[in-house]
Image 1 (cartoon, rainbow, N blue to C red):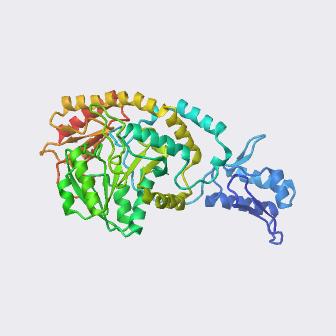
Image 2 (image 1 turned 60 degrees about the vertical axis):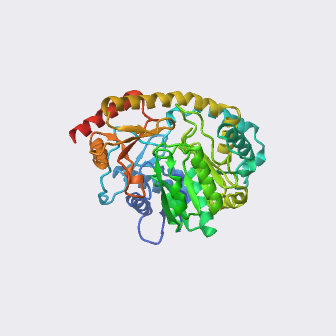
Image 3 (image 1 turned 45 degrees about the vertical axis):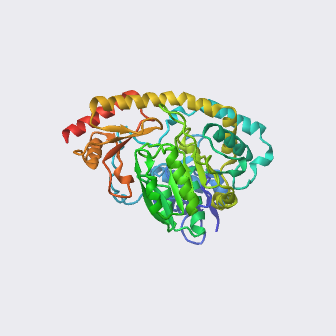
Length: 468
């Protein structure tokens, strides 16, 4: 019962099975097998079939059998061939029309999406130089399996950078490399749940993905701590029992508030008294415009605070590079969880970023991008002042987004929907609240839009609001 398979890279998919006792000419069996493969979708359009000589040899038949089958399928339109080239599948799956899918809303023509770096400015040349150095200079042993914390070179580079720029109190031994914040917080919450944690506190409003979703899926109760213009209201903490508190103290997401020194002290006092773990999400603190740098909370209490940072907002989210500076008693458990999850983050990427950091390229990239983002922020503020003066911007001194609070007579959802009809993507604060309390507001990301498009987008938004 001779059989042959495709050479299309999809190994394991049977192409032809011949039965010499079936009473059906061999070339007809070849035709039927290939035709059925195309109709079922197993052989997709563009798939290259084996040369006639190769397939004939695999099947133990004369080449003329395969040639005749290919020619018939070509005449029917199933196959196409070029002189000197492969024979290829020429049509798609021959089935009933696919079921109708729900219509997908068109993407906004001008999108004030938040949390996005301008990846068009990724420092490709400098990154490539680091990649080349890594590939030519790294000892062979570094390309094997490492422990779950990541490569030592990146631990050293990050500890030096974070202590210098963010005021952390990190040693290389405290750092675990993750695939971004999302993986790190999932691993950490998993450890808390395994240790018996029952409740996680988050800012209200706060991002509704990552921590909140993962905690809920792990069976933990998620409670909100109200936020005002300066971050969380720490007086509320005394009424909350939680095993962990997740904060964005240097630039609260989404309101932009900065947690004061007094409030930071209150949070740390509460954590020390209750035994709660503080998770400091330092997602965009490198971008500041009208204020002095704000040091990390981890530097004040490294035994109580987990510091989380990533390259997503500074370089590109596609790198999937994150780092967690954790209290010493959690390092081994977090590293073990990382190994169990994926055996560790890609070594070459880690070594490349370590080189990039150590040679000052990361600092240079940030110095280039700060004025770019500042100009875009300034353009957004100017456009809001001119076209929508009743909106009150907040959280403008740093980051890559701002919030504009709406006057009471404007409904947040109606504004968002009206903007969408004009092709403008703006996003309400409401979906990120745990409670129903609080004014309506819009989140404007500006990192990926140039000044002209920012002005055009606000012009369209103003027209949508005027139309009601």
